[in-house]
Each structure stands twice: as structure tokens, then as C-alpha cells.
Image 1 (spheres, rainbow, N blue to C red):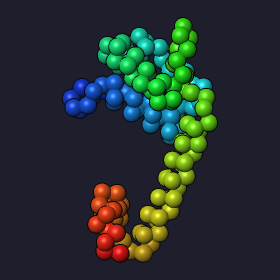
Image 2: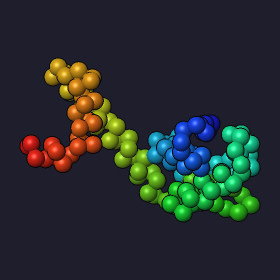
Image 3: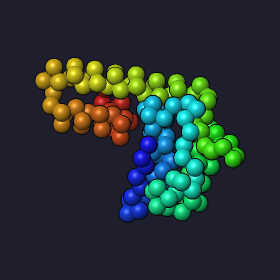
Length: 131
């Protein structure tokens, strides 16, 4: 797995790394029990301080996503929650795909569908008053 961090993104590097690891676990790229690279190894690969990687790993351990075994490395936690979360994300993706296809069959453009999703996500309280 290759992680890419952007120092110009305006977001701390450890948070970028955390997001990428979370995303990989949620989408099934990383599975329960998979070992992540060692702190120093990953720091050298992505050219950051080992403290950056250590902080990301520590925070993810605190969240319950990683299990750190001293002397052995960091692993995706063997908790049932991470599998069920990735399964929920996969099922949600299938439902969204089916809805988009149905809306396209009804004649809505991709831009109209995008606007509907954005309106629902960002302004749900406004839509409640108009329903």
C-alpha cells in the first residue's frame, strides 16, 4: 500500500496519513489482521519524521482501528466493527449507484443529481421546511 501526503494541503501530515489508513480499512484494501509498515520504514518511504507516523498510528490505536504490538508492528485491529463498517460502506455504495442509475433513467443529468446530493448533505434543514 502506498500512502501519499501533501505538505501544501494545509492539513497536518499525520491527519492525512490517518485518513488514508482509515479509508483503506473501510474500503477493504486493508483487512483485519493486515500488518502496516513499521514506523521508521513508512517514515522513510513517505519522507516524513518518524514522529509523524508514530502519532498517526497512536491516534488510530486510540480509535480502535489499529492494534500496536510492541516489537512486532501495527496491525488492523481484529475487531468485528471494522469489517462491518467496510461492509456497510460497500452496501451504501451499491445503493447510491442504484439511485443514481434510476435518476438518470428518469432524465436527470449528472449535474442535477450532484446538486440534489449536495443539497441533502449540506442543507437538510432547509429541505425539511419545504417538504
